[in-house]
Length: 244
Image (cartoon, rainbow, N blue to C red; front, side, top):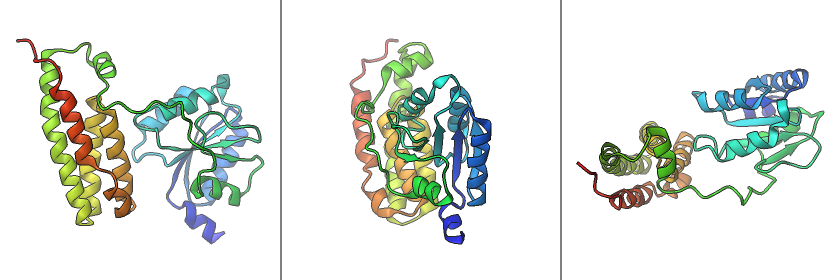
């Protein structure tokens, strides 16, 4: 039991199932394995918990009795969320997986099966239907701020310079194996990028932050944040001149 507990120690897992008894049973098993577990029964409650979590959840376990039959909708929402797209998704059911699930875990389950599902290799290929992230999602940005204004274009141009500095600083921190600095720079870049509609840069910064948190400098160095920041700057530079 000790080895299994160490495998999940400190991990944060959300269990989503409309069957309260089963959700509580899975959460109890996770707690016994030294993970931190929370439960939800419906789509919107689960998304609110996942997107508002600080620190973030490491995984979500989806049962086949989510209220309103919304399991496939929830999985799709997670896979297309800029904050959650790389969250590990485990399906707690004996049936075929819904789109976006990484691992199937049968129920009734065991501690060994839960550990394997949460930290073992992904056993289901990622769906090909999830769209590639755009460099700059203007439609999403305009929907948030209410239109492409002159002030918004100026803001984006200021951000282009800031993003390139944050990206360079994050890479320098990684080269120095400074986990705290690398995480801090990537975290700031991630938040600013998603707020500015820079989805691809935000996802790259998110992956970089996770690699730095694990001191996985090989993975971190493979994420070219400066190149992503330059690509964003080029798209922003191509925007029309702001009208006075």
